[in-house]
Image (tube, rainbow, N blue to C red; front, side, top):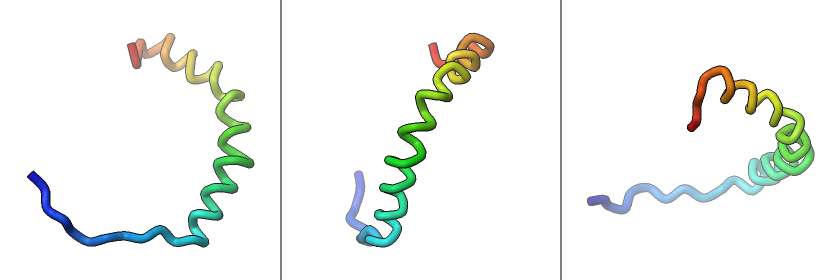
Length: 48
């Protein structure tokens, strides 16, 4: 069971910053890190 609590509204300036980080950095970074993520899975067996 839950109840309604505080309402949080996004900060438009922060949203713009995070949008730029996502589109200009993360989307380019993730494919380059894929081989390392695979190596982590190979070594640890996680996630299965």
